[in-house]
Amino acid sequence: MAPVTELTVGQVAMRSGVAVSALHFYEARGLIRSHRTSGNQRRYGRDVLRRVAIIKVAQEVGISLAEIGTALASLPEGRTPTRDDWNLLSTAWRDGLDHKIAQLKKLRDGLTDCIGCGCMSIDKCPLRNKGDRLAREGTGARRLVAT
Amino acid sequence: MAPVTELTVGQVAMRSGVAVSALHFYEARGLIRSHRTSGNQRRYGRDVLRRVAIIKVAQEVGISLAEIGTALASLPEGRTPTRDDWNLLSTAWRDGLDHKIAQLKKLRDGLTDCIGCGCMSIDKCPLRNKGDRLAREGTGARRLVAT
DNA sequence: CTACAAGCTCAACTTAACTTGAGGTCAAGC
DNA sequence: GCTTGACCTCAAGTTAAGTTGAGCTTGTAG
Image: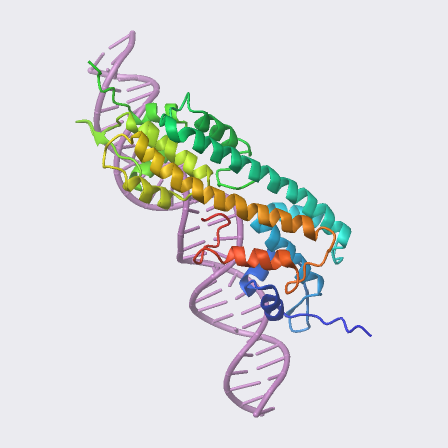
């Protein structure tokens, strides 16, 4: 009964709101997968929509495609992510988000505290030191919110 | 009395914790400035330390170098930023920070709400839609925390 | 059966924020 | 007066996450 309703790239692009080129890109990165028609055109299962949705949400939370890829790879291959899968991922990501929020708050509070002092001394300013510690958290990441 | 104690790039790099190449880069971007010795070497006034500190803090808060440059440009040319100057900048940036924190919180809460639903439908999931709106906030910015 | 939209691949371009390297100069110690 | 380390300039490379374009193939509507 349920006709497996395969989707073309264009359709996925339209329904997910990401560009076709981005879908190609995600596929090259192993984040999504497709099979091909006899004419070499991509066809996607419905699960791709959910995967793309997850990708976008995760990105907004500040997770890199690489990390998203790792997380998605942990899901049963080719299966539509279940509620439990999603549960796992979102919980982990939410924790990361909490962490990030906490960091920003610290920064903001430091900013507030520092408004009066005007020192910004590298050695003495609490804001600077807080910042340094923050900046060193990731391994060699120089991008702002790499993690 | 106060010997104006000029600093070399190397010294600034050491004391500020940023690479020499980064200082060159900031200078090229107009974020800091130096004058040259007869032998064409850079010499910095002490104010550069504060400027660099401001740059780093602002970056951690997710402000781009371009924006930082604009803000710094509004400071009296060549003067060591005063407490009032810093006050102005930090207040403005703190507002941005508050905004960003609020956004992330919304996202986190959406994530929490969605844990059970497992839907992630593009059209119906509140998280997705919230995210979309968020993503469209900046003008064509595709980088995560461009603003 | 023929347009023409939609797909395909692959390479190159984009932006931010730097880093790395090549090739050459300056300054300070011995 | 020479060696060594810090500087200088300028060009090219790097990463992330895609986009853009060229040149070619598919598929579908009329």
